[in-house]
Image (cartoon, rainbow, N blue to C red):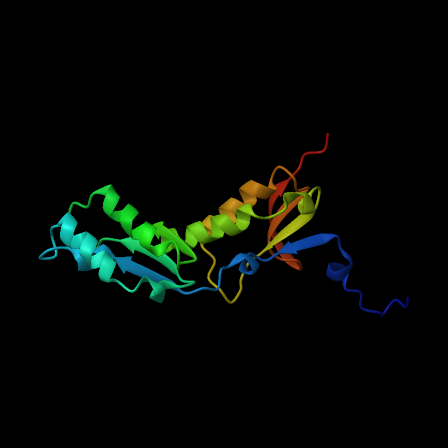
Length: 171
């Protein structure tokens, strides 16, 4: 090797890059607002509520990720949300109570929980930073929590420019 030859030390390193975008569920995200089923926008009447749920075309939620909320300032019994979940479950990919942020967190939690952590045992890991898809802070916290017991080190950024996050102590 000549002294003027450029060597890509990043490519030759033992760093493992983990891109959280790879765990992003690409399906549509929608909000199901229970307020549409309330009498005068304020009161949940059980019989009317059940009848309106029977009239709903639940198949329109096929393969969608659904956040269930009630945007009205009304007291909603827990069983109402349960009924909606039961109707959505056969069609939707994911159903959560809460806003789109809660939905995103649940999707990432499910995806990250499926990672085979043994693949990262004693690895030097770089959690990729910037990308095309906005990744919630939750995902960075969760992947750090999951990898810390198995990784030799965890860094954030790009392999050529990282911020150290964790390094296993040498015994």
